[in-house]
Amino acid sequence: MSCLHTINKSPENNLLKSCLNVVCSGDAILFIEDGVYHCASLVELQAIQDTVKVYGLREDMLARATLVRTMDSVEIVDTARFIELCCEHDKVVSWF
Amino acid sequence: MKFSLVIYAAPYSSESAATALRFARSLIAQGHELYRLFFFGDGVHNVSKLTVVAQDEINLQQQWNALINEYKIDSVVCVSSALRRGILDQTEANRHDLGVASAYESSEVAGLGQLIDATLNSDRVVNFG
Amino acid sequence: MTNNAKKPIKSIITFISRSAPYGHNKANLCLEMALASAVFEQDVNYVFLDDGVFQLLKGQDGSSVQSKTLGNALEALALYGIENIYADQHSLEKRGIVSADLLPGMQLVSGDEVSKLIENSDTVFNL
Image 1 (cartoon, rainbow over the protein chains, first blue to last red):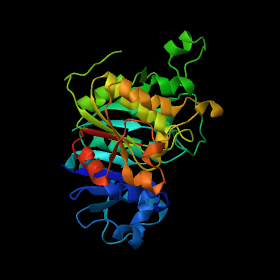
Image 2 (cartoon, chains in turn cyan, green, brown; image 1 turned 90 degrees about the vertical axis):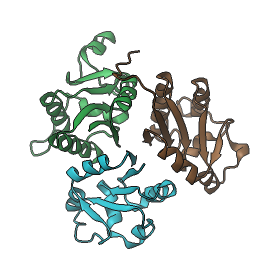
Image 3 (cartoon, rainbow over the protein chains, first blue to last red; image 1 turned 120 degrees about the vertical axis):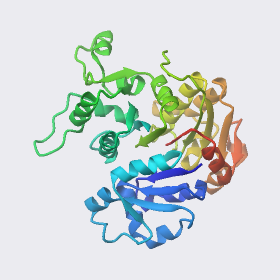
């Protein structure tokens, strides 16, 4: 059983911290909307366990000019892949 | 897979309603089934037909309506959220003597039972707020 | 009320209520969904996390801001047969809230216990 967590607010809102308190190994986190600013912050990303895969939504990065600032540990995905990720995990928990 | 989407966000105030619309289009394009759209809280504004936007802007409500009609999607707007925000179909408008309906006919004004039904009958429920 | 479920089954739905009361309606929306789930006889877990634990303070009076008192509404959870009501201990501690401040009937849980609830659920609503 694994879970895809989506986070749509910037690091200032502490959603990642809340999410990390309940995340399980094998879960994945997908940053969307203002959440993609996490993907440009090494400090934020370092808080995430190695057993949790990290994704960022490409469309939101393009809009915000953060694609080039995105760290290597983040896998960049489009909306079509977002949907595949929903299918690959047993459920989706949205943090907003 | 069968998906249901729950939309809590009003259009324009945040990006979430637009994200949900892109998600809905993409999952249909991939051949998945969209079992139900459920508009809740401020999300009910997405089914308002009494909206006008600038010519160079996207009318999200119109786009939801077009998508719902094109693919005959089961779309529900939560009655308790909708009425207090001025989102009424003709039946509710008549019942409350308000004359004009503000909701697109493509969405049904109904109760939270439809959300529970969606959780029971979908493989994935995805929330946008 | 109508129930069009084609395969009328029971599922486990976990609600994570993370918002403080009155300032935003997320707390009310979460409660509305949980009560509806109970009416349709689903297995409901209700978890108060982060600012959501502010909903549990005793002595609320919403009438001073022309609002229904959410604390009273929470007592409705039990009336609707929702017995699995949890408050995240870490969230309480962080906000200086002790058990004596709380409405009755809450089970205090750790983050690990919340993640187990999520893991064992069919659907999670988190708002």
